[in-house]
Image (cartoon, one colour):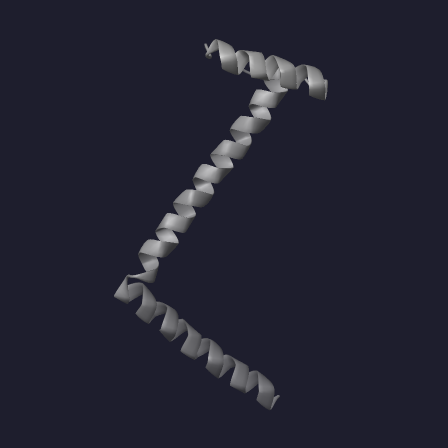
Length: 81
């Protein structure tokens, strides 16, 4: 594991110390969990933005519709069996 040193505002460090004491958890573990959650939210926001962009892209819509038509044909063939 790599060591990381950073500075934070005093009020934030006070909140971190209180949370650490209340949760009986080391401050570095709280920071690690919070950072993981934050980075996951950034990833989700990026995915959401890309899906919204694709929703307005005529080429993507056409490709999706084509795929659905093929899927529908596969389902009809499956029902025949």
